[in-house]
Image (cartoon, rainbow, N blue to C red; front, side, top):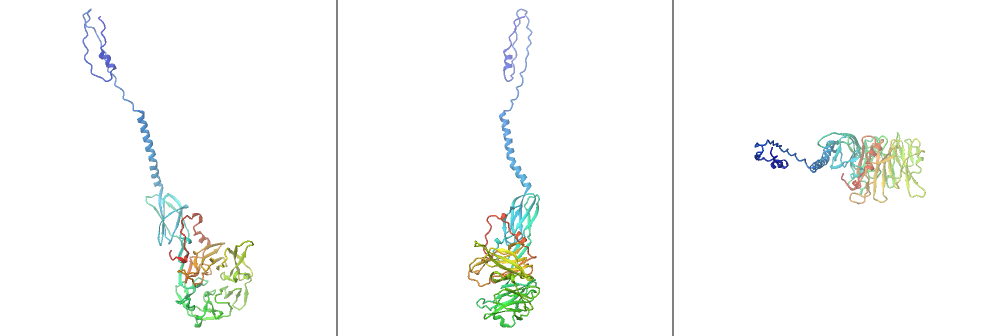
Length: 491
């Protein structure tokens, strides 16, 4: 055997090299000099294994993770907004009532969109789907600057807002509480106990320069007729007239008249105009009197005059402030007593009720912290009292009409400016004195030469009137400040 041939370099190089290349043919092996034969050589060639793919870089995987997290974060508000849109819906409330309205959904205020002569539109951009309590207050007295208006009861209703793509619309029709309207041109009105007829005096073209230029009229609420009462005898038209008053049945009018310092009371048949003088003394035509009881019982401080001519002294009213008494319906009288607290400048006016059955007894109704004597007119045994309050000490003052019941006084009108007319000049019109019928359901008064009627759908309840007022805790900044009713005619 000859020497072992060396391994070809090409083979060893092929194992170490990277990429595969075609191998050249192996050179011939020289014969062995000893045997003369060619040596038996086995060449083993092993192909090089395929290189494994490179694994992805760790930084690339982190980048993908960060992108996924970022996209997830961005999708959260989108999904939330989508879910919010499914679970919420805009709300639009239309209140079919004149003037401004205030709406609250579970105590959250709605925003006004449009206010016109007949309705108000309010909205809430987003409301949760489900059941809510809607509360609507209509125009408050603070918003009213007109002499004619309507007040409504508070609307409170549970509503269910279901899913939808458009706004949820709710129409509100509040129930009327009372109406204030002008019924005639005139002054010094009075209403009969049944609330069907209203007597008043209409001044003529030359009044007050000619005090006798006036007419006595009776307005019938059931028919709308406004009849002129032509007095007979005719010379009564030239005398100074006081305020007309209905008797307890509403069939006859009584009126004080004055001539050359002499005053008398006349009984007038308002249908025929026939007038008869009655033998009841009265100091002046301006002095107030009224009728009470089941029969004609004329009441003038400090007596009650019975039909048989007897006089009953109203002893309970002996200390009546300014010696004035007021009607409490057909059962009794109302009067005030002034009370001064020791060591204090505060003066109180205490209102008392006294019945005709017990003229020496009195029961306190309410107390006012006011120096000016109000005008009151009662009903239902003095349990429902119409109060006309006056504020201010100058010639110009304000009058406000309210209702007392169940230990609560609620205002029915905004304050009216008195003492001057629309042009700011001195006014000769009498101040407001509100009268009610026997149930307190209809109230009349005059203001600047016009007669107004406050008309309730049913006998009023002070609690309902109080409930129609916007509670203080719901009042928001920006409430419109009103002008006194005498300074504006807009509503």
